[in-house]
Image (tube, rainbow, N blue to C red; front, side):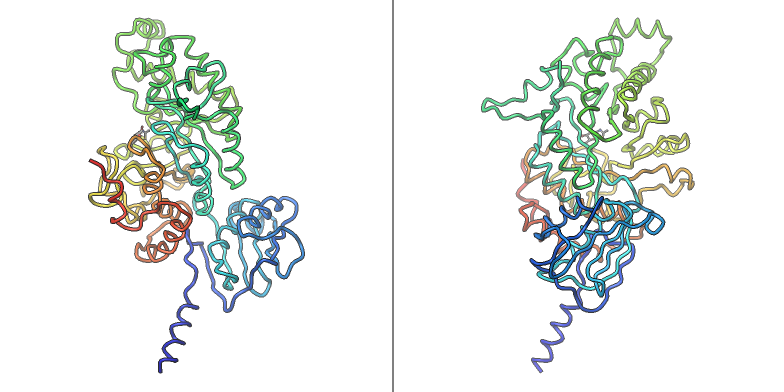
Length: 494
Ligand code: TNX
């Protein structure tokens, strides 16, 4: 009898399928498995060669054509797999085969394969898959607290593993400016420690980060905040700033500065977008400035919003003149930025601004503060940012999973303007890498599920069952992923 029980147990283990995150659109498990080992080669030619080398490296294999077995990466016509990020993965009679019309899809197929490898075998399966959204982003605030290249590389690796494709770097804010800009050395001068450690990025650092991300099909979108949230630059160059924190819209020097900054940013970041922030301009931003009063009189501007709109028109022109598409927080949709500015919606209390922007035809990225801001706590009583704005309790896995990114009120035309979704890890209160990891993982995996999979509903219990082995895997890699509330104690400070 004991023997029988053991048999049942072992067949139950064999029947447990690998826990995939995000869950692909269609998964058909076969029977048996395909062996996989040191003599397996990864075969990808032409435009698939780079992905083949990457996959080989990740799986500890060699690229090549001949081996005991092969993982084949094959580019097929777009008529067969129309979404360039979509793929077909076959493990079975034909060996291991990944097909896509684009290297991106091959890459995502390979990420799915990586999640299925156990020891020296992969279970037989046929997977058809493609993402719901083409913008699947994570914002990392490196301004409030600095996180350097090595941290970003780690995060980029995990983003790639879970099929995210946009890393938004919040590079400047009130406490610090994290990007070296030729001609403006004072921006970063204060960020060099006595031992020579730099808490900012040089041009070479950025090139390395961009290349590392690009190899993993991740676009790096730079954000340079203005006219508000720019106190660091104001401290360095007070002559450009009103009251030390808000750029002076009346001074020609301001636009020379802005042009120098965006020229450098355009040179370093190949992404087609430059984010200029534009959030939270105070109503009294330009109070008591004779320059701004003169500008208002000259141009017939009445309110702060009018001045803001004037400033933003100039900035938008500059960003376009360096060959990029401007992007901004949703305040700018309200302040009258032109409809070709990509709008990132965060103010959950202002669905009216979002709808109006969609109505006018602006491209949209969805980042509502109460759903995908990872600076908030994950469970009751756990540490997190003290701001108001987190309706409906902690930003838990359950909350993220129940989030539907496209408002039900959107028409199909409006819904088509939603490029995708972006989570944000703001760091006013996150000073250490361990805590950054704790606040990001595993919530980022729930976010990836939402970003990739078709519209819900999503079953929380089913997701959590899939999640558990991933959390263990993240921890085994040395990442401080949260398992449960018990892990929060380490980060509670008084
Ligand atoms: C709002 S999102 C901000 C950030 C803060 C964040 C904290 C946005 C455009 N502005 O500056 O870091 O809340 O949750």
